[in-house]
Length: 74
Image (cartoon, rainbow, N blue to C red; front, side, top):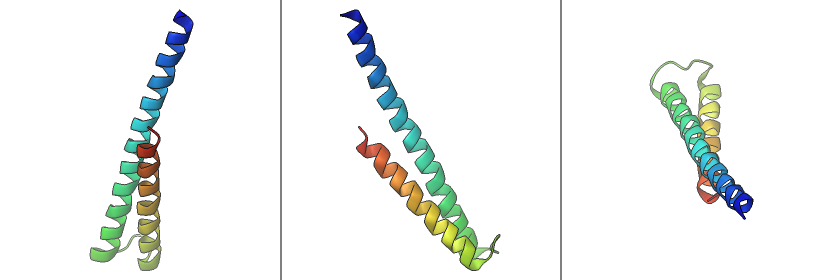
């Protein structure tokens, strides 16, 4: 009886931790993509204009997918 309660609590904690980590990593990737995109449009591009725009849009897309998946996981 006690072992099943501990397993259930551990499973709940792991779900919670994975949801939080997905939200944190997705937000970080999303913000980095936005910074790279703004840098490519307003300031001098670091890699090149097309490369910065491509990497910025890709980072935003990946960050949004991670955020969406972490929200749907619960």
